Image 1 (cartoon, rainbow, N blue to C red):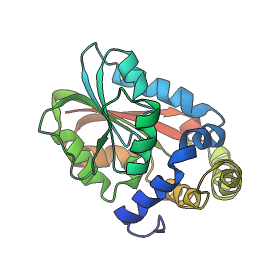
Image 2: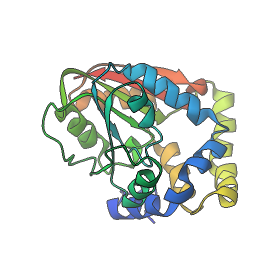
Image 3: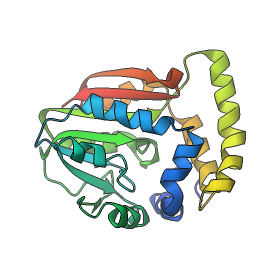
Image 4: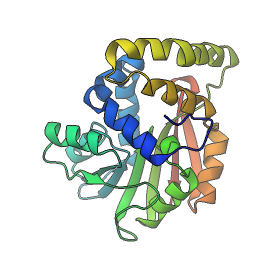
Length: 229
């Protein structure tokens, strides 16, 4: 398995997510102490879809993050490069149009979507800036981007506690609930190696988006970035 400190090999990351697909949602719920549900609500509010809006949910996994957009009346396309994730998602949510796609080569035409969102998946794209540029390509002028991603806690003592949990407790807990606990060692390392809030905003700008801004959730463990096409 590729380590987070090295170049991410797409085939390795894809196999990792295929392996964790069956218990991915319940594992995330346990590891985040249920906070993942709140974070999904925050993403929905940030995207603020109108009825009939076309929304691309990239790195959608099993579609748990996509269903709220459908419930709001949007036309949502869950897209992921893990076939294992898509298969589990299609079994659970057969009405959603799950689509296989590489974040650096999206299978959609220019200016297709009113909004693009990605939650906890940008750091797993082999070239995140290229991925952000692809998201920009498929978003109509004036459309919006919402990125929900792990970040850097803003209070130093809290950051220390968080890193201790991330690197020690997270792999241990995942052994009890995950279908592939070794994958969570990679995930923990990828979170630790990810840039801070300002660093991600700079990447979003580099990819061609305008006016990036962010809001911290859970003390900065997660940051919600928004920008305009």
